[in-house]
Length: 171
Image (tube, rainbow, N blue to C red):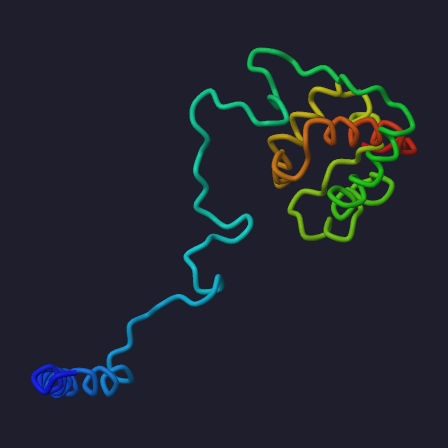
């Protein structure tokens, strides 16, 4: 390496040295936020708003929940598989408010201004499956909609199971 090249490198190093030292010293003073993990990302948590509505005419991947202008008909036979699945889903999603036997006496029932429906009562058992389906899908009163929690098939399984709850002469 020639003397001229060495001299040029030394001059460049001397000119860049204050800049590099300045960057190292100001790093602690001038902090630029840089997300290093997902906890610091602008993500929205589960069931936390804002929700973006689907485009007009979009159909969920599991099929339409309710076809407009039609009353839904229960396509799921009340066989052993449906009843077993319905019982499991009922205990997960419904029993906290409606109670284990469907009498509206679940552990959370006392927190409602109006008690949850008695699913084993004569009024509930006389309703069409379509009305129960719409109540599960869209919610009713203080009952939240369960459209995001249950698929179309699972909603019908829960309805099939509630039809087997022990009946009583209540509401």
